[in-house]
Length: 451
Ligand code: TYD
Ligand code: MG
Image 1 (spheres, rainbow, N blue to C red):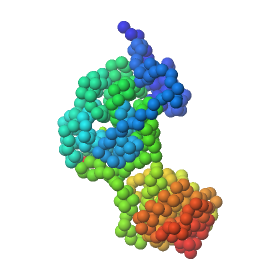
Image 2: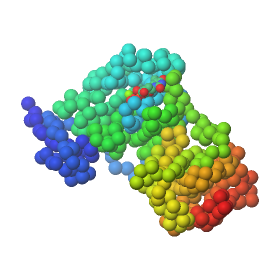
Image 3: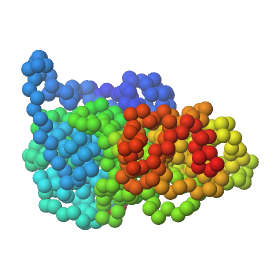
Image 4: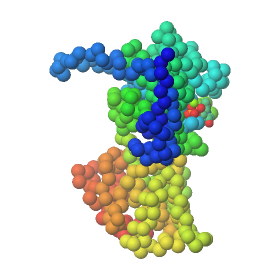
């Protein structure tokens, strides 16, 4: 009988300790240590198969181009770097209910080769019901509702599918480990064995992993360094748009991003996000303006709405959806100090349209202008786009990839873009149809727009 050992793992960061600890030394989380029992016998690790490798001169290594294969989803292919690389392991993380199962089931249904969808969460009937909601049909997808890792890997070896999908890694249990499903050591062990399977058989595997807002469950965080590609599926469950973003990719750019829309028939790819995100029928309302932001490598024009009103209570409210509240407070302080606006006694509400979250500093000017427009109750020109960061002294600072932002605004038919004077180096103003207006500071912009 192998000896059973007890190890305590931090469920937040995966740090281990032979003793229970109140506070994790590694991540500082309180009360996150949980006892997990392991049998003392040696466990296979995902890197075992590498041990037999020989030392070779780098010059002698032959470069073979990865024959990637494409899924029927163009957005998904682009995010993973142009198709799935054989033997690669992709982890898709996201909050429960965001649509991970839907996305992968949809890929399975459209895939033109044999695919094995392993579900530890739903029965075959439930998956069939979901598949019926999605209109795509295919006979290449097989379902296996199982949580035992050894049975799963055996079935994979027998049936030799072209792609394996595991939904989700938190429900899979390996016989080699005694702790419960979803615990750090179980998740790590299962992922290790799956990676070993993927690398030795050149079968690509997609793993689904749940995370919650606090990231406190034994989540995909510990797996991120083990897998080849990490994708995040994010969005607001109450809105229809979902963003698939790559945060690590050994076989492509980690800057890619794809946008989907959740409709009654599953997830629909959004090919031209800007035309969907911006309301074309904008009436001349105050407090609304368009900022040119960059997400990954893609320019997005985003509508920002602000409402400024007299505070009813003693302490004015500041509320922001989709934009960092601390940044909003800083921008309001700059307006107060540098431009002389008395916003201290006003409630300020800010909203980014479409349920998106933006942390591009280039949105600063758009935020400030929508606040000023609402405060002064003067609507802004609906054909104008803004792209500049604001410094603490109220100066406009240059932003990255301005050329792309200008081109996107031009493509979508806007007449004018407001930028920082320092950003014009290397930009041929005369060659653009769109008018490029450059300013030094917020005060200058204010005089131009409202003066
Ligand atoms: P799901 O894929 O189960 O989420 P996850 O696997 O990330 O937990 O997504 C569930 C949500 O998607 C659910 O709230 C309903 C919605 N949905 C649609 O709006 N349309 C559809 O066609 C499907 C299948 C799901
Ligand atoms: Mg699911």
